[in-house]
Image (tube, rainbow, N blue to C red; front, side, top):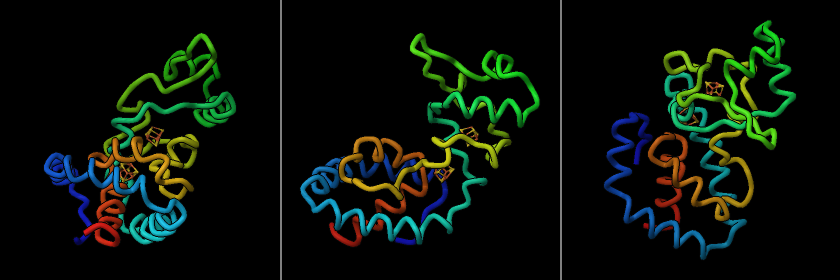
Length: 165
Ligand code: SF4
Ligand code: SF4
């Protein structure tokens, strides 16, 4: 399948393939983890540079982003506002001190592009996490975003082509 980047089309295909994807997920759980990781990492390296995240921004409209204390300090310096002001304006804090951006879509998304791209949070940089090991141990989370992230969508479809069909 050629790469699909149209978000409407991806959503539509995801609906059509819901049953297929449930079966594929069960199939993957029974496969050798290292072999699947090798394929996923290889497809991710090829596919990611072909998809322009600045023209998508779909994850920024859907994800709850966790932030560390260090990141709030760095960003408040960058935005030249106090840390208290940053937290009041942009962050929700739990009683245990866990911090998340307080809006979905994210405050910092302008159109389809992150307005603090160079200073975006670790969790933003790491999504969609396909470069990490243990893909088969993270299937639930990954497949949750199959319909919103063109990188996940295309890597999963490529994986099906390689080992499933
Ligand atoms: S900080 Fe930037 S990359 Fe992260 S969710 Fe917000 S807009 Fe997206
Ligand atoms: S990571 Fe996925 S959903 Fe987020 S901007 Fe890039 S392609 Fe779009």
